Image (cartoon, rainbow over all chains, first blue to last red; front, side, top):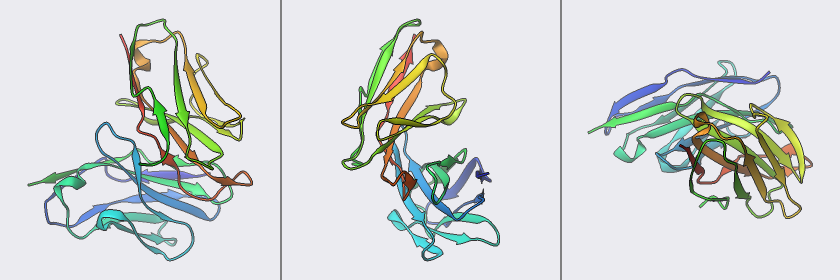
Length: 113
Length: 116
């Protein structure tokens, strides 16, 4: 069965410092993995996705994530945080060949000036 | 702009009432998903339709129902509303080739329901 664990419910970083949001997944098949961002009172926007191509995936706004099958992880990183990155981030897994999307519980990122 | 349109954006109503939320998926997307997001429950999957047929059910209450019409727009009906139904309701669409997942979900901006 599919599952997603976001290891931190809240993360605080200073502006200009690196961001790391952690995500572990469980999947029976070949997974597709996604990161979404949600700003307050907004819909969810796709940051990046992994669908069995390159394991290092680059997304929008300088974010990237690395698919590590041996560790069943898909952590989201950004070299330098910006104030506008403050938002909630969701890790999502979907087994390729199914129609189910499993969402993590979200990580709220706070960026300190 | 994701291409997914939800109406209304905001809705205030009273307990016991019934409301309908509408979603137009991206052009070409055959599948529609409904989610409920509240502070205490987080993001909860409600129901999914594919090309007019119900495909999967999540944590959807019996007081709630949905359908997808021939033009692929979808409606979520919420009845006998309770205070706890106050939430942000999202619709998402996806292109499912042959009914199987091929990629990401595209989300609308949501409908915020307030039950007083």
